[in-house]
Length: 348
Image 1 (cartoon, helix red, strand yellow):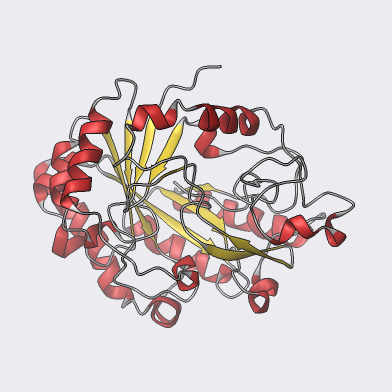
Image 2 (image 1 turned 135 degrees about the horizontal axis):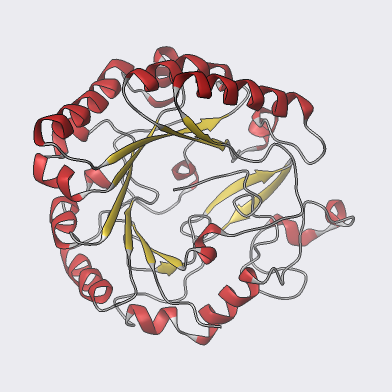
């Protein structure tokens, strides 16, 4: 089966200007770094050579607006669909009129109202909303149809009720799309903060119903995660023919395998590691994408030819759930516990 490369998640940096309490970056042992200009030039040349490529996502595990390469990369990739994922705090400082005009979609992370954002992210809420006002004003003054501005909300037991006043505010600010993703714990002491569960979850489905009704009143479109475990699995990276290039040039399959770290899946602690199919400094992007190992991996995941840990009868006594090195079929990396594929965790 052919998989033409259509989408690249480009991590210009894994540095961030914030220190959010729920961030995966707390688990890293390597020092965060910006992509070098030499590597950035190489990445641009390689991506430009891919005739099938349609979309560039400037995001990853850092804040892209921190990167010195950000302005130049936006200009160089103009003509492609450009998506930006950001914490929103540097928008007024870093996004000029010309850059805004080249971007198709900006997704801003907002996980609550004033006290919550200050406590969890160290962000002054009024400044963040001023960034949205700035984008709206730029679009109005220059008659831009884009960028569309979406908001992503990471939901947990601590903040879920703040979504109602947030929806009211977003509607006033002409935001039309809200993406809800579940919180993915990294430590066992965070395990009880999740809203989703393996079995039937009537309370959360009822809450989602209230949120949906409220969104209708406010003119918002809401994308919901799953509330409970379903049989269906779908990897958004595989389905959209996407890959991820880290700030050091590693070509990895997805967010989950982009860096080392840890996660807690239904109360089970798991160690994560980076899984790379090659580095763009050593091997051309298309050669990595079309390599036998990467093709085999994509075919296996696309066709769901891999085990499923959350609904396995043997999961509690299995040592393979402790990491992502390989699954019970001997395949690596181990995707069998992936909460992204189960649509509990959602990324743009």
